[in-house]
Length: 226
Image 1: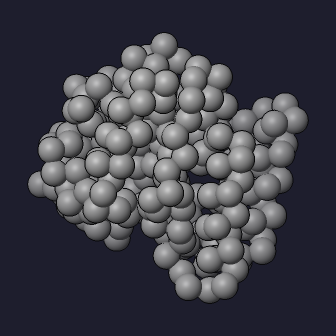
Image 2: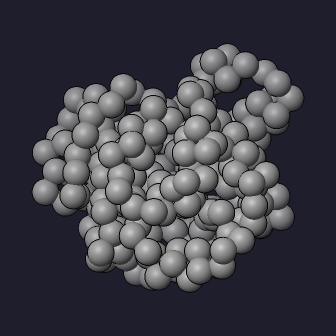
């Protein structure tokens, strides 16, 4: 299996090196593609020597991930946020899952990088919800067979909830692998905006999207914290 890993980034100079180094450890043979959305800091300078390819794309996580997928050569694509640390078994876990021909894609369990009891609980509940619903958030390192990704038309061009919509479409195409291995994602959003407030805002956005509220309207209430 050849794995291509796409990492969208924007002003991530504080996090991107750790993310890319963990990816190289977890996927020594994988192709790592960083996609910058117009950073004004040192993100590009830091990322360039740590990835196989660095490209620039219009700002927006969906647009950046789709641009990276176009350049990818792997038969399996994985999408990892710039503040997420993957396990050492990352590529091996994906390969084991994809060995089942019925699996079209999947995601990892999640842990936040904060030992606060509420943060521990949030990570566990996100993982549980994802396992029950067979959908995922972008923080969970979504992976997918390349031909399935192309059939779905990539990530929908939305300013928010592109991961939710993609995951909903993906599960209609086949079996989803809900891996027990965990990725560790930054809790900076919860720390800076408040744990309870952030959880409430995320659930409100998610519920409103599923109820049909236009994503452009929802994006105005989303705090883009780095």
